[in-house]
Length: 94
Ligand SMILES: [Zn+2]
Image (cartoon, rainbow, N blue to C red; front, top):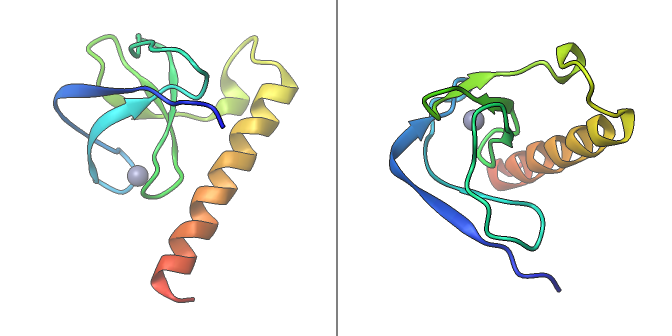
């Protein structure tokens, strides 16, 4: 099992989709890397795809409109989003 590293935000950052005040980000690979502008983020509350802005807030992101992102990476993002949304439904008991 791989170890994941989280970076706490200085101030909570609201998800533009669900409004959840996100307190940290977790890099998906085994490394401690802080978010930088342009990085993609998946909200683990609602499954929305967001992107870090220049001031490290989050804006909604359409990965189909991002230039240069490989199709396999887009597929992986969609898979994770679907899992988060499925977990959300399971929590609601639906
Ligand atoms: Zn959200």
